View 1 (cartoon, rainbow, N blue to C red):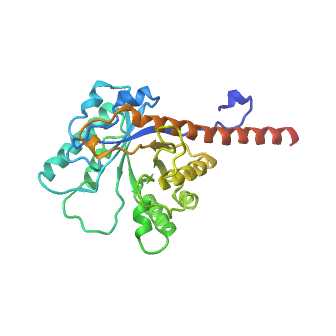
View 2: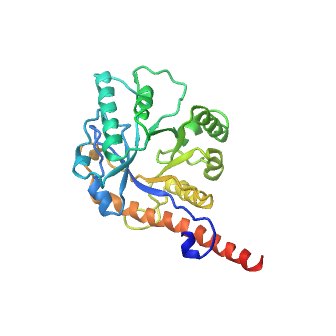
View 3: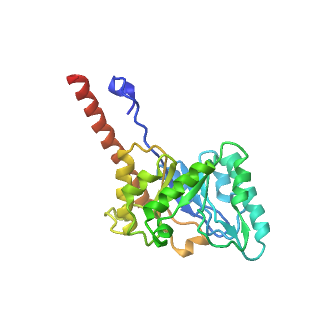
Length: 288
């Protein structure tokens, strides 16, 4: 709600940008087609390329520009196996085309985990694409990895934020992996600000509309409440789970039912905080 709506000098309350998170086929095409996302009320995609064996020119995206804005893309740390150098070249061409034609703004790379790389590193590739202008590189924050490390995962999160500050990187919190039951949602978010610009969650509902009882959904719900309280205005990606079969063929629109329900719940959380702030501000104005 803006200042004109309240008739006051209260600062405007900015809501987050909500996008559809989609994995890709083995050749890098989005499993959730852009026209399916648009029909569900989403106008941007968050594309996960980490399981794509190779990438080509955006394929199905080409039929929907410019309405099919692609906000962000997740890439692996390295390519291994046959033709890895050629695949890295294809990925660079793919990302360049996404920046120039489809509005790509952020490339998300894995955080360092101390393991030795044996293939073709993609970190330099991300920095080269960044030089195109207007593109940011974000470092993935993976709860499943941080919880598996010795010591407090809160300390690990704080270290990642300091690393991001030193390298001028953004942070992207990925809450979609399994095994994150021990994640302290509220405390970790406070350690990620102000570098946090992307949060990826699973839907909070099942396709029949019932509240999901999955651990990822519960942690996602707590994170959304905290983000709303802090007036977070970055990107929230809602990424439905997909079956292995859809890595070969695009998914049907049914996967977007729970995604659309989650979007409405996310927006409602921000509206509640906004309304509370308006009421509090008005009382202070009235009583001094």
